[in-house]
Length: 333
Image (tube, rainbow, N blue to C red; front, side, top):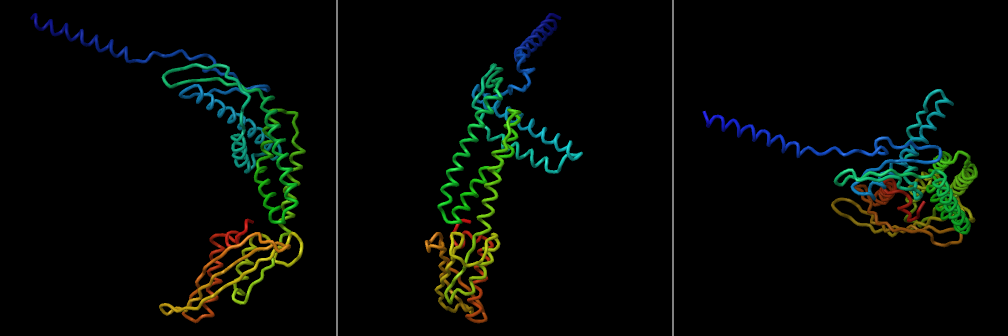
């Protein structure tokens, strides 16, 4: 009887001990700060965002990312609402527009911000509340935009002294830099409702119009030696596919493409070969070389040398289709 009571008593002690150990393993719930559970909403003057991270620095980075995402949603929502009002339904372009807005917002650098609150919530768990003044953010964006257009003005001024292709490429680069300008202006208007970006849009349209005018006036005249007569057609086709003209002239819009071939006849395994070393040179109207390339193409045929030479043109056409006319003639277009 004594042994049985002892065993029961020991079992109760062990069970109670396990329960106490379990209590020790349960993590203590931390009291979350009110600013974390109910963060302030962004207003007409300020943007707010919560951020989490392994440390304070990564938490701030996360907060700024959340801030620009909120700005993206705000601008996109306004666009969608405007579209619904005008058309009676959301345009199919809305989703594309929102993706563009998101891409544009991601490029915004929020340098004017303050960490309003911060707290370590646990091991490798940090939280911050960040605030940014809309007016200051708008001012920094406007300054950045002005600087960008000042650089563009200098580029376009120097472009006037270049040949038409170089001028076109400069305008093409500028167009690429400004592709999201309309969306950026909408974001700036969201930050400052009185802002109007008309003058920037006018400059943007002038640049687009000028680019189209320059590119539409560019013409190439293709010349060749006797061995390269059949190579003119695939080159001309590649040039035309880029929307350039095939014509001769003597101004900055005109360029000459010279094709020269050295061909060696050979026979191998029942085939007649035409081993061609092709040199392509592009010159401007002042006879300055602005591009060149060399190609080694071997044509082949079982029907004689003439067909083998024609096969060189066929292979050149295939190379142009695969690699592009710009790479084949050695000139950026």
